[in-house]
Amino acid sequence: MKIYATYNIKGGVGKTTAAVNLAYLSAADGYRTLLWDLDPQGAASFLFRIKPRVKGGGKALIRGTKALDDAIKGTDFENLDLLPADFTYRNMDLLLADGKPTRKIAQLLRPLAVEYDHVFLDCPPSISLVSENVMHAADVLLVPLIPTTLSVRTLDQLTEFVAGFNGRQPEVRAFFSMVDRRKRLHQDITAKLSAERSGVAATPIPALSLIERMSVERAPVTAFAPRSQAARAFRALWDELSADGTAP
Ligand SMILES: Nc1ncnc2c1ncn2[C@@H]1O[C@H](COP(=O)(O)OP(=O)(O)OP(=O)(O)O)[C@@H](O)[C@H]1O
Ligand SMILES: [Mg+2]
Image: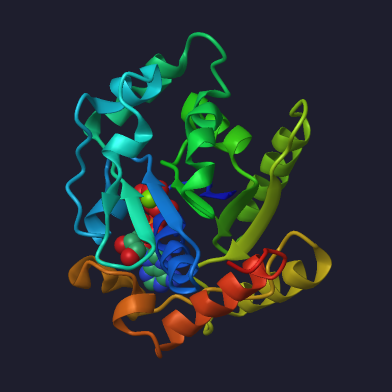
C-alpha cells in the first residue's frame, strides 16, 4: 500500500483538486484506491457526492472505537472508495494529542494495507498535529505550488522540516498548480524549477476554467471531460508520479 498526501501549508492552491483527480486516475488504472478527506470543510467528499459525515465523528476513528473500514463509502467509480470528512475533524488536533501524537494516522491506516493499493490523504491547509500525522503516514507528499518566488520558499521549508524526522521520511514531490500561460513569471519559474530540482514534477497543471467546473459537475475533471486539456495534464502528472510504482 502506497500512501500519497496532498499537502501545503497554504490554502486554495489545488490540494483537493489534485487529490480527487489523481485518486480517480489511480482507480481507473486498476489500483484499489481510498481517498480520506481529512478537511472538516469536506470539499473532496462534496466532489464525490458523499455526505461529509462519520458516525461518532473523528473521535471514534482516532480512539479506535470505530474502525476506519466501517466509515468508508463507495464512490460512483470502480475501485475508488472515500473515507468522508466530518465537521468534528476540526478538533482532530485535540484528539491526537495523547499517546504517540504524530503517528496515530499512520497506525490507523496500517490494517487497510490488505484492501487498498493506494491511499490518498487530502489535508486541510495549516501546519498542525493533523498535518504532522499525515507527513509521518505518507510515502509521498504531493505539494501543489503556485508559481511565485514565495511558494518556492514554502517548499524549501517543508523539505527541511521533513528531513528532521527520525526514521522514515516521506518523499517530497512538488508540482506546479494553476499555471497561467500568459504570465511570463509563471513560465520562467516553472521552467527553471522543474529543470533545477529533482523533486519537482515536469508536468504543470494549468489554470483552466474547466477545473473550476468540478464543483458544478461534482466529479473529477478526469471523469467528466477525460479528453480535455485539464484531464490530460492530470493524466501526465499521474503517469509521472506513478512511474516508479508496481503494476496492479
Ligand atoms: N488548475 C486550476 N485551474 C483553475 N482553477 C483551479 C485549479 N486548481 C484548483 N482550482 C480552483 O481553485 C479553488 C481551490 O482549489 P482546491 O480546493 O483544490 O485547493 P485547496 O488547496 O484544496 O484549498 P483548501 O486549502 O481550501 O483546502 C477551487 O475552486 C478549484 O476549483
Ligand atoms: Mg482542500
